[in-house]
Length: 251
Image 1: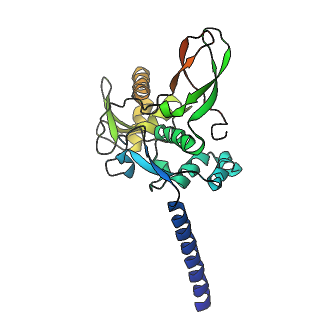
Image 2: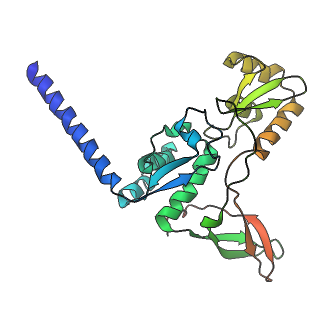
Image 3: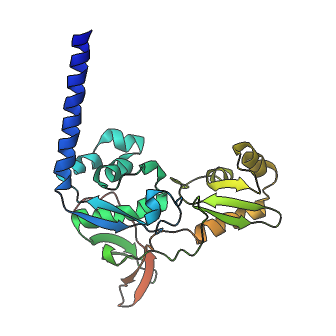
């Protein structure tokens, strides 16, 4: 028994030593303080992300392997794994809002491959596709004017009820109205139980109120302003939201 215990202990010590070595090696890499698009206003007051910034190191070739890991891509965790790998500020990536996650991807791209990103946009005047270059450094965070409570939650009033909701959610893309509501609503009047919230969405959250709430949520959401002014074919300019392609992390 003692030999088995010794072997396990030695193995654990080797693992600890390896982890410490990797930590020391990574600490020698250059890093930068990156602001969150939300300025940290959407997180609980006692959460490290409420400081509105994190420290990230520059990517290495080892980190690039994450971008080509088929298993990560298939499971939809590639971006989470990448952020987790290069973040020197310690936090649970699951706590990171999709709005801040999207903005961090921009900073990672700038740090790794530079600020210039070639895109294809459609000229609204001629309908032709144009090849243009976006300077990612010039993207700015949208104004975020809502005030959160200590939980990082916000208040919304319908004609009859008071709701609390959150922005630090992973993803609301392609969610149905009810799925969206279940994901972001944290309190209905004085109740925070999931059963109460579910019953409210099913039987009391009128379609008009639901639609107005979703619009309010999206209109006030934090994030980077991805609308860029491009030069048109005729020499004029137009504003469009630039597309991020599969080549975003490659040059």
